[in-house]
Length: 407
Ligand code: NAI
Image 1 (cartoon, rainbow, N blue to C red):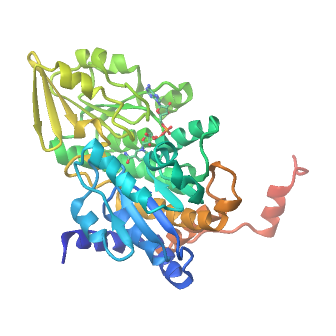
Image 2 (cartoon, rainbow, N blue to C red; image 1 turned 60 degrees about the vertical axis):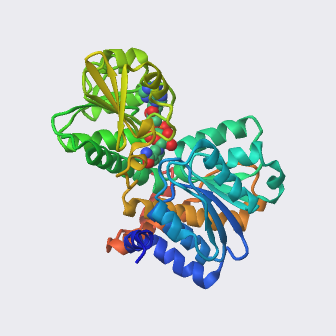
Image 3 (cartoon, helix red, strand yellow; image 1 turned 180 degrees about the vertical axis):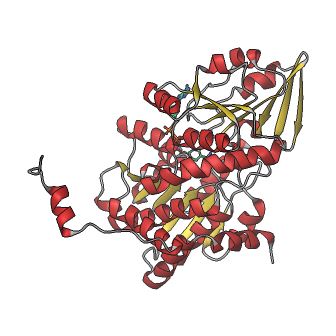
C-alpha cells in the first residue's frame, strides 16, 4: 500500500469521534454541493478530517499552512476523487501562496484555516471571491487573535467559528497535544535527555502549561517566563521557577517558546546563552526566535536534519526547525497525537456543518462553537472510552437554578 495511505489508515483507527461523524455525514450528506477551501498542516490526521468532509458531500481543496509541515506522501494519497491537494513540503514563499491561490481559484464557500493565511489572502488579494463565502472556521490561537483584530477594525467580511476557543479544542489540543508532541519532536531530533535539564518555557498559556508539566514529568527543571502576572503566579503555584527571559537566558539548556508573540529570544538573550543551548518554538509563527539575526551574525552556520547550528567564537547555539513550530516542522515531527486531533477535528467537522446551516444568518465576525456541539463531542469520546458520567437529578437541577437557598 502507498505509504501516505498507510499513515492515513493508521490515524483513522484511533479517531473514533471523527469516524462516527463520518458515518452520519455519509447518511445525511450535510455538505452536499459545498466547496470547502482548507489551509491546514497536511498530514495523516488532517487527511482523515478532509475525507470526512468529502464523505459529507463536499468538494475539498486543501493546501498547507506552514512550509515545513506537509507530509508529501500523505498529500499525494489525499489527492483523489473530490479532494484536490496542493500542499508540498519545503515549498518556497511563492509556492506556499500559489497553493493558497489554487484553493481560492475553486471559489470555496467555506474556509478552514490554521493561522488565518487563507482568510487574509482572500480579504487582501482575492476579494472577488468574498461574495460567495458563507463563513469559515479557524483552528489556532494565533489565527483567532488575527481574526479578532481584523473584526475590531471592521475588516472581517464573513462569520468565522473560533474552533480553538472551545474547551474540546484547547483543553486537550493545546495542553496535551502541544506538550507531548513538542517534547517528542525535540527528543527525536536532538537525541537529548530531558531528565535533569534546565528547560525554559516562554509563555504559560495552554501550550506552555502543557509543555512545562510534561517536561517536569520527565525530570526536567523547568523555568517559566511570562508577561501576564496572573499566569506567572499560576506557574509559581504550580511549582515552577518564574523569572524574566533575560534572567533565564544563561541558565537554560533548552528553550521552548509558546507565546504566540514576536521577538522572545533575540540578540541580548543569545549573548547570554551557554554553549550548546538548544532553541525551538511551539507557537504558530516563526517570529518568536530571531533566526534572521542568527543567520546574519553567526561566524559559521551548520545545517542538518532540522537543526541549524550557529557558532559564535567558541560557543554554539542550535535552533530546531528554523524556529517554526517544532512539533510539526522538524523532519521527524508528527504533530499532535492522533487521539487529540480526533477531538479538534471533530470540532472542525461539526463547525463546518454549522457554518453551512447557519453561516448566512450570522453577522461577520468571530463566533463561539455552540456549547451543545462541544458537549456532543465529549459524549461521543467518553462513550468510545467506555466512561460513564452522572446526570443532574431533578433536586440538583432545582438547587443549581435557585437563588433562594442559603444557610
Ligand atoms: P495562550 O494565549 O493561552 O498563551 C500564550 C501565553 O504567552 C500567555 O499566557 C501570554 O501572557 C504569554 N506571553 C505573551 N507574550 C509573552 C512574552 N513576551 N513573554 C512571555 N510570555 C508571553 O495561547 P496558547 O493557546 O498557549 O497558544 C500559544 C501559541 O501556540 C499560539 O501561537 C498558538 O497558535 C500556538 N499553538 C501551537 C500549537 C502547536 O501545535 N505547536 C497548537 C496550539 C496552539
